Length: 419
Ligand SMILES: NC(=O)c1ccc[n+]([C@@H]2O[C@H](COP(=O)([O-])OP(=O)(O)OC[C@H]3O[C@@H](n4cnc5c(N)ncnc54)[C@H](O)[C@@H]3O)[C@@H](O)[C@H]2O)c1
Image 1 (cartoon, helix red, strand yellow):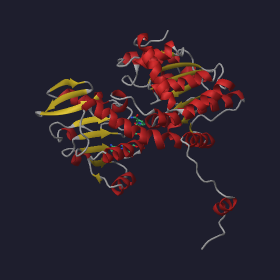
Image 2: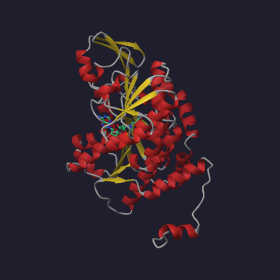
Image 3: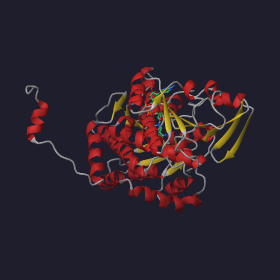
Image 4: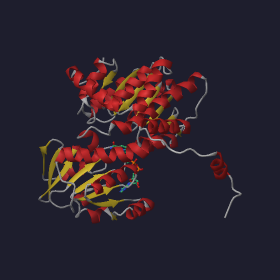
């Protein structure tokens, strides 16, 4: 039995899923082919993903391919309850996710997905895979392979592999070019701005925005904040990324030096306590802090909750903490602001991310049916899948590009022609 908030939201969810689908032409093309070929016939796929309209279209695609699918949330705040209702009512997919669910329910929902003995896992942050390995190790032998959607999940999976704990092959969907070039950069860039504005109504122009982390997500967000007129400061721990940020025209400094300057602070690192108490104590009255990295560990809220003079909710997604007589505002309890306060990434970028998820599931099943064993490690998305998705996306955008001539191919492959 699915566990969702309320089936009565189904109609609205259905309309929004269809709307997202209009911007997911690559996934639609794959779904149409899956419908005919049924490459996932009778395969059980267990998914732990942000439950959004785009994810709903991925679920439809897997089902069209013949798979049985169960879905739970990869974050307690990112679930869209109208989408869960529509998936259950109109698409007959078992969903276990309720927005705002507590930690116990979150893990009970993961258990519900694992109880169905998935043969393929799709994870976003590695909570499904880590629970499977630690709580139900005997079930791992049924699993053909798993795919991981995000940077943080891949870091955790590499640790599992290094510790000798990983029990089945994983494909790092995040690392496909057609995923992180677009989803992490343009998707996170736009939707993080969207979440902050929805939560606060603040004017970005003229404000000082401190961005922690200049990776794919940080670059995307910094670019958009700059475009809206913010004075952007970057903090980093990687020398190369710091040079890149400086040459892109941003001020780069330590968080402790940026702390008194910022009006808005955004963490996008995948790291812990990037904004700590000694930083918060230096911030000005009225500073706003939020996170768009995967887990709610980037701001030291545990300590802030202990030492603050008071805490009160002042509007949806905004908590005011009083500390040293100043007001510091934390958005969405330090969870992914773009998914908590807004709708996550636009469908047009999730189109490529979820095309990867679909084709990787097909790849695992094809290998399994051919009796081929994949190594037990974290692997890249096969290049032909990445290239195929890029070609389909460009085609859907009606953009034509030049092709190499025979002469150019020969020239580019040769070493003999010099000055
Ligand atoms: N909000 C979303 O929807 C969304 C989408 C994709 C990825 N993510 C998550 O966002 C996070 C970042 O992902 P990414 O793809 O940009 O990763 P990335 O590895 O490209 O970038 C992370 C950057 O943070 C820097 N960093 C690490 N610790 C730091 C610290 N203490 N101070 C300053 N900088 C620090 C690293 O040097 C690196 O440059 C991950 O947790 C990822 O899972 C979120």
